[in-house]
Amino acid sequence: MRCENPGAVATHLAMLGLAALLAGAAHADELERTIEVEPDVRVEIELLSGDIELRGIDANEVRIQADGDLEIDASEGGGHVSIRVPSPGWRPWTGSTHVQLEVELPRGSRISARTQNGDVEAEDVDGELTLHTANGKIEVEGAPREAYLEAMNAPIKFEGRRSEVTARTLHGEIELSGVTGDVEASTMSGKIRVEGDAIERAELRTMAGEIELDASLAEGARVHAKTYSGQVKLRLPDDASARFDVQSFSGGIDSDFSSRFSDDGGSWPPGPGRRLSFVVGEGDARISIESFSGGVKIEHGGR
Image (cartoon, rainbow, N blue to C red; front, side, top):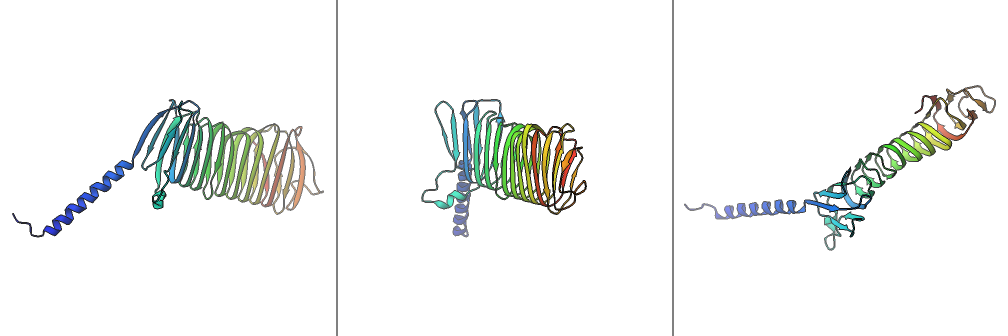
């Protein structure tokens, strides 16, 4: 049988060959690797663009899955693992590929993960945790001893168990629960909410947003909450013992606690523009609150 259009057949075969080549290339970029490591291995991850998912496991292994090409280096003895995008060399356009990276690692790992464009999630990690992203959210669930979380234009959410946390973002809400010891949260625009126990030091700052702290305080704790535009609400246990220094330029100050207090002669609760100092209990902790546009509320019933 004679072919009516040999050129069309050749074109069709060429297209099939190209499709097969592209499929093979995509398959070749898929990565799976398992590395035996120490229980407290240091893992460093750096992507230009990609989502990072971290999951703690009960095994002394780092298990890597990715849908793109990555450079992986592991030290002898399993003390250190590095995962990063390969240098683009003379093909700089290849560095912009978005990578989906999943890493399972020992729960006690010491982790540093950074991506320019993408989300970072961590689950069931008990060691040290440092996460950075420029354009993407950060979500953590687990019990890291210490966590440093930094974003640019996205929210940060942390659900821990007696963890010390520093969380910073320019534009986005910050929500921290299960924290203890030293806690810091700062954002230019967004609400800050913190729940914890035995807080020793808390620095909470936002330019445009509310601040809410629901926590018990360690003896001698230091707490500073400041917002330019937004309400500040503290919820403390009934047996709280603290000395308060509170200022609200255009909002009232209200407290559920019986206290020894002194202000500029105004009535209780004082109105807008007042500065108030008062003592609850023995005054062990020191709490400083500033709100330019928004009231201050101090309530019973903290954790």
